[in-house]
Length: 105
Image (tube, rainbow, N blue to C red):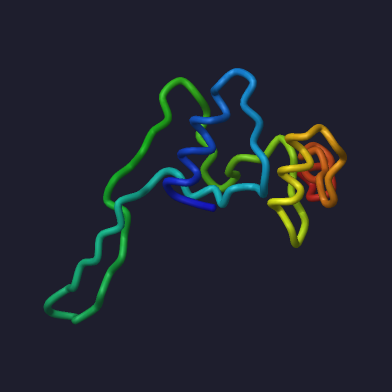
C-alpha cells in the first residue's frame, strides 16, 4: 500500500487503541499528486510528484513505511481479521514485531 493508503495508516496509528492489521506499507510518503510533463524539444515524458508532504511533529517514514500491529500473511485475510476481532487465533496472524525481526527491521 502506498500514497493515500499510507497516509491513512499513519493517521490511524495516532488514534489511541487503534490496531493496524495487514502488511507493511510501501514507504512512498514524501512526494505526491502525480504530474505528467511532456517536454516539447526532447519529446520526453516526465512523471513526477510535485507536492512535498512533511509530517508535522513526527519522523518521516519515507522508504520505511508503517508496520502493522498484526501481520496478515494468509490467503484469506478476511477470515484472519474476523478471527482477530473475535479474539480467536487466526491463521496467518503474527505480531508485527516477529515479522520485523525476521526481515531485519
